[in-house]
Image 1 (cartoon, helix red, strand yellow):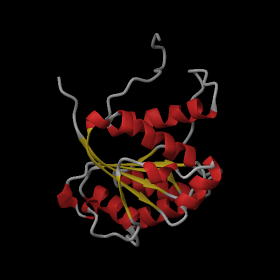
Image 2 (image 1 turned 180 degrees about the horizontal axis):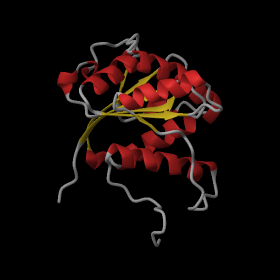
Image 3 (image 1 turned 135 degrees about the vertical axis):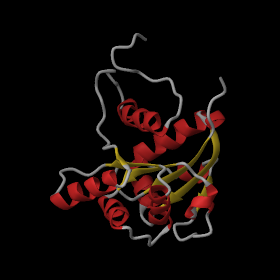
Length: 191
């Protein structure tokens, strides 16, 4: 059976955890046969955090189309473009709050609003800890609106040996939630 092709939006915010965004974008490249279209948008501080945390600017070498944070002409700024999946990784608490409040002040929050109003798949990879009641209530609001909160909480049963392997446990889970077909370590499954 042929693999389903997805139209996907990847948003990267300035929350700490650039390794998650890096691994997500790298894994999506290996799943290119499952992608019809992909658009990437960075928040104002996301590229600076990426450079600081990873020591590189590999985000400039992405094979996916990159859109400016204020580019409201991007196709996924409208539901008629039929992008079915949006992943915000990592998702800052500020971005979460704006999405929960319906504030569409940039392309990331506008695209998230579109995904929710069209009843499509929005996955927010939140990274902050601890959480205050405002964060928890914003997560509740987004969940009630149809979004998925997927905290960047790695798993250890696969016995990861590097930071990248540990972070990949989160990204593999995100890609599963998004509906991609991928090979990954699964609980109680033989190698």
